[in-house]
Length: 97
Image 1 (tube, one colour):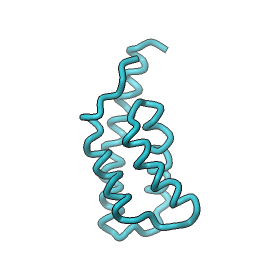
Image 2: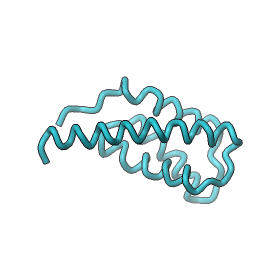
Image 3: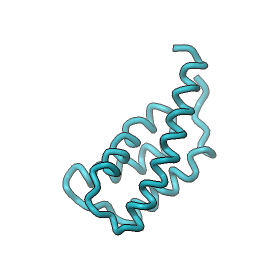
Image 4: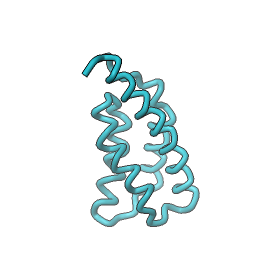
């Protein structure tokens, strides 16, 4: 894959992650109810963030994904960590190519 193609994928990931930020914020505001859509978003973030070079976002999403996978409700502080990682994603510059 060309560097341009990889950068286009990163841009799409960042755009989707901004949408995920809004969904996770709404989920937290609602008290973290069981929500398959948001849980899927968290799972996808846990997988894709590392692949696109965002280790902090990857780690924050993985903590929530692990809790969800064993049937636990994530802690509010862990959700806030994911929100912060999503909010600061653009300042965590992914490595070039």
